[in-house]
Length: 388
Image (cartoon, rainbow, N blue to C red; front, side, top):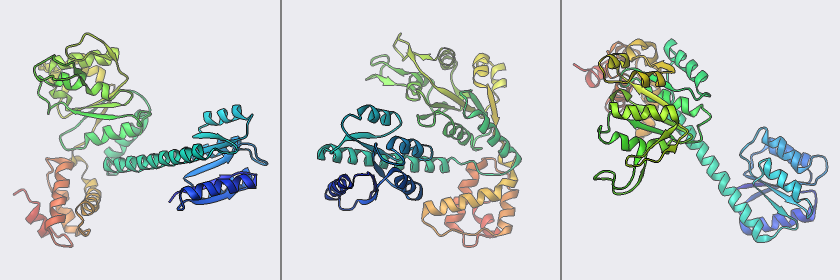
């Protein structure tokens, strides 16, 4: 059910609008305001899906009302109602963020189409916001240890810039969480976050994956293909395990970073890209440079900001928090009743040597949630989580 507010000082026009809308959809909940001030009060105190607002009104006119609403609510769609001769004012309202403007008396089909489209847009914006919240929750960095607080502080400082970031740490520590958090807090968050696992792509295919290719440029190139750099245009490209990238691909990545241009495999045409690159590795890149496996010039291009994600053994104070977080998350995912962990079970899990880091801990918690009793005891941990 959609909730619509009509702000119009002419009662006859309000009656017409109410009739049109209720005949279109009887489920619409419609509220009315006879002037801009009353309309503004309703917007402040209630939640609406759409506002139909006259421009010329006493006390607070439609333009001022739109301006004041936009300071606190950027997503509420406005359809402005204007008399003939007020087109310039209506155009001004569009510049301020109104969805549409309609002349009075309103044309039935034009009004209905505009209302439908505005409500659909509002629905999509709301769904996108919910999806973004779910994504943010999925990639939440859990913990309050000193090292985690330091990572949050770095993210806060670097996110709003376009500085390149190199994230280091062992496998399973959550390097991808840092990359996602930087993107979500950046000015690029509305654009794509594209992830490439450089270790999972054969060396002969990595250039095609990153830069795309033209049809016929190699045996299996049956059609033109866009690469990840193009897909991430105006957004963020996350190059995970970049220490496993071939030297040839490294040279082309370096050119892309230096010139903001790429070439598809089989093409001589430059394609401009605006991409923020975040890289991650579990290798010591300085040693890889010494061994001739990684370009030093690329390293310096990538490592403008360094973020080290510590292994779990260096942040054991976060383990109880992580246990609680994963327990709730996994119980919900599996449709299983949430289980309590006894103190002795938590203590035993704290004492473990987590060579697989956060990833291994999550797997163990999932096993315990599914197989162990409730509450989960030390004996359960020994039975289902012990590596011995």
